[in-house]
Length: 144
Image 1: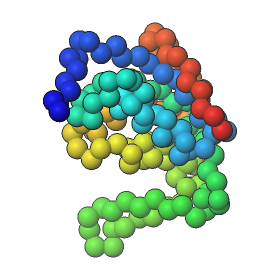
Image 2 (image 1 turned 180 degrees about the horizontal axis):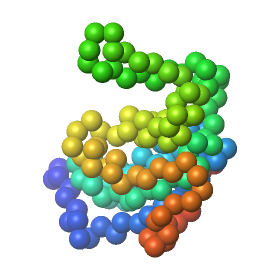
Image 3 (image 1 turned 90 degrees about the vertical axis):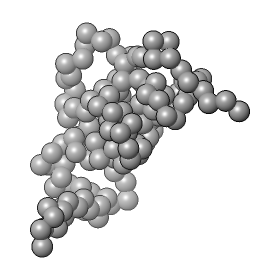
Image 4 (image 1 turned 45 degrees about the vertical axis):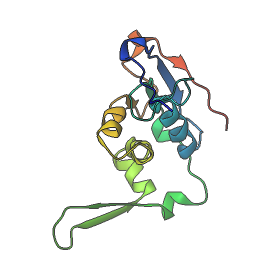
């Protein structure tokens, strides 16, 4: 079997708009990653950037289930002794409204330079306004 290679000039890249209001955070992230990687296209190639761009609005209004507001913890480590800082979902959303959505998306992407490049193709906003109107993003509907 031969390796499939799609020429970058042959790929038509679109912009999609996802409204995360009253949607489950993980389901929004899964659909965004499918679009970013290009898995919604008939010629998916795992080693190339053929996916589309994603704009997510109302990321601060995404829901979590099962009491994760208080139970889900986010950790970061400074590298120094005693430098572990932890906070729950609720406090992270109040401090940085887009951080949980960005962390969920980044965690689902490959852990290499392709994943870092794909993460630049997603734009997450806390409110309903976004500066990407000139790209005419298509509304992508996610079922609840």
